Length: 115
Image (tube, rainbow, N blue to C red):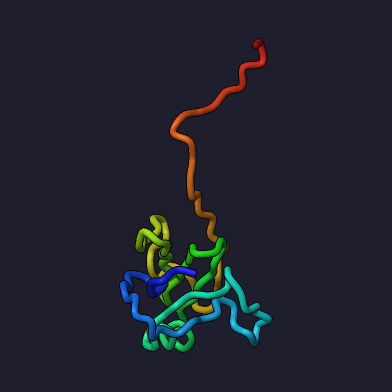
């Protein structure tokens, strides 16, 4: 589990943060690595009651969606707003699937079948 607040652009590393379940217990969220994220009380309340949504595709990688439809990727290096996710473009209550390319090779690899 990351030692810093997982809310976008947060930087708190206090030992008094709350441990949030990315998928809540009421929605069959498990207790364990990959479903935990530390947050300050304020950020925990915003996530729970403020229409922010978070997913954890991999342990320590947090994909946030704000109430306006913008996406943010949070990891141990900080926060990045994802391009192509303009705010306010989705109808209220809808969730479009988002595909994020986390890494790609700078060169195209071609197998050498002649060797």
